[in-house]
Length: 208
Image (tube, rainbow, N blue to C red):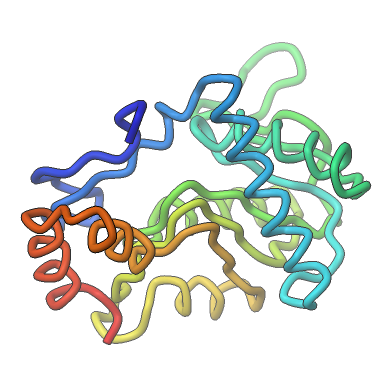
């Protein structure tokens, strides 16, 4: 909230839903914040490896554009703080028609086990596109790690988006924070007007 990455109000999401809050991870772009965020991502991944939620993987994939700096700093932090060495790959929005060409940058994902890094998941459209990009380039997606899980029902209106993505990949989706954490924070800080709107949104779209 100190950099407006988390805002409250009325926002139309990519899914078409009108949300009382919006998470703009692109504003998490200062040195101290990136250090905190990459540490949280790396710790979530390391814990996931230890618990068996994630299998050993070869490449961390950061979807363009917001996922690129997060994946880069997380790959670095995984090595410096957890002694976990993985490759880094990311995509371009538009394929390059000169030089090396293509829409992928970094290590090759072909024949590799890939963990996708995401910022926030609502309908899951963006992460599904990232998964397809990895597959189109010969990689196997073994899991997803995200900063914020909005904990909303997915495209079928019944199961969660996370469960849908897990079924798609056969791997786990882990997150640093969940919507329920935001609700607890609002409760603890007495932000009652926003709390009521969050609960109403949860009643309509949240997991039951």
